[in-house]
Image (tube, rainbow, N blue to C red; front, side, top):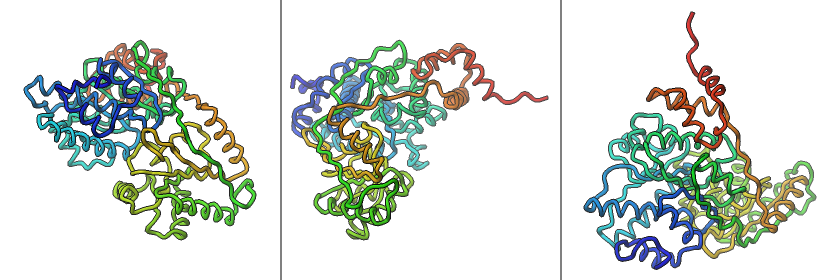
Length: 458
């Protein structure tokens, strides 16, 4: 058990891991030492390499040690915040963290009672109120809900005791204003905690790695980067309809594609069909249901209610569905069972996105993802060829980051100043510690403050 930072003599984590999962992956072996030392870590590794578990097990071991030092029980204080870009993924993480905790406790009844709760836009009001009365040890949330928690009095009380924040699937936010928003929230969290908060970033697809590490920790802070690569063996093909592709697909050509997709679904046990818009998701699911039967396929996207999304995920995982037609709502690591094929109707225009989506099949150590890409126009055929060539060459998109968006800054300033007064210099210093705003000038900050201040009355 030399690969584990969790001594088997004092912890049940390593024996459980070996018995349940076998030997740790290289990503886990490399990540555990610096995480255990309390350093900031960015772990880049392919889908299915156990990144999230590497971060969580280290957090659980810290909680175990704290409980034993205190006589066996943990105080009702939040120690770990896990930030997921999707609400559905947040609920999935809570579910999949609960199972290992239960199994570890069976091995060691003395293992502390670690409370894990989800706080997202789907969380009922009564559960939100209960969380402020008894804070969880591990809080699972989204960037948007973290922002709300940092603004409310009850949420700030929960977050004051945080020591570690885990930012999963960081590539999903870094290239948009959501990334700038999250970066400011992380600085607000650290200021609220009154201490350095350990930051752990996890992603399967990102380039350049140094820029992502800078985004995670901000200027002037150290970050250990662990690069296990973004690529693994992949079975990816491009399939065309019988009719020639033009600028726009005819109804007949769409029918040919739907027929081919149905044949692929029939030939596999469990399939995800990705499309690029909710409208196409609903249409494709309807067409496939007419071919395969309404009980065998359904749609999944973020506009559906929580109940419908969870029902679709659980039915697929239980083997009651043969396929789900999804947008980006299933792009990340939601546990929907053993998927053996991903079909993508339309191109992604992003190497990373295609790798992420195809990686939902064969999701596990040592397994090979399998995907079939259907371009839907002559232009997309060219894009599909470029995507296939890039993946074979192991190329990856360069992740661009927005620089200091002032609308996001104004939103965060108003939220932070609701609960306390700030000296201008202190506010500027906090903002500049986030990477997107590292070069923000005092003049630009004053412009933003004047914009958000009430207009003087005559």
